[in-house]
Image 1 (cartoon, chains in turn red, purple):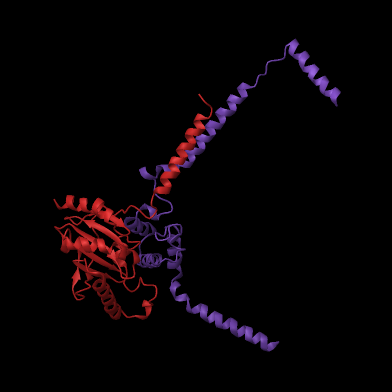
Image 2 (image 1 turned 180 degrees about the vertical axis):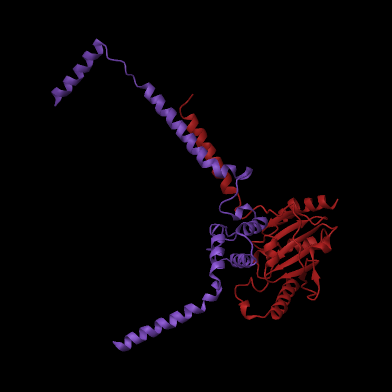
Length: 194
Length: 155
């Protein structure tokens, strides 16, 4: 046997491992919530601020929860996909508007009282939807991001697929590309809707 | 000179007064200490190579506030850790628990070290065995002497 064989095997193994490491997406952190019931909440709706929405209202249906905000740049990237999804009426899409005012670095929310914050959040969120098109069955306001924490949100946009029993079946972090939608989300939704 | 000193003293006072104004975040020192200790153990998911205690990301702020609230609610450190892990996964912990997926992480480096030592020891033994200790026979002794003498002569 050649005395260079083992070092060569070791080197190739190292290259393969480094190659795999480089191709992993460090932002793709597996969510411990997949397979668990969607955390409950009750939040005011953007288009009906005096009414609250809660995930249990959706029991018996497969639905998507999409975390978005008007200050979120990558949300604009995925928005056409969502609008298309809504047009084809594939699956109900609920929007979780994440920290509409507080997430926007330019606004000092310490100086705004809660009522004004809600008013301004509604105004901004509804305005953005009017401008870009509204794919959501409804959107709710998570003004302080507390519900976002329960869902393990760490970068908007994020999307959750929730089944008829209210169990989270998938989480996608980052904008939904047409490929992700037709390759990952759509097959799962079809499967779950059976 | 005196006037100068006075001016310096006044400026210092002004700074001291300002410094005091920033304090209320750390209203309760005990809570704050525990919060820092816990968040030192947690990874900030937005800027992944920073700890939660050292990060200026918006989410890190929210999570630190959340930890403060949990501490004030009388939760133990373990319960707070569980709170974080149940939402963000084992990845948020700088010291992940020992389980199937983290086995390589915990023992990989030790395994590689042991493997390296085994290879090194085997190589050294083989090299030792290769050294021929047999005494020279008469013919070889003569050759060796001749070589040594010619070297002496050259000097």
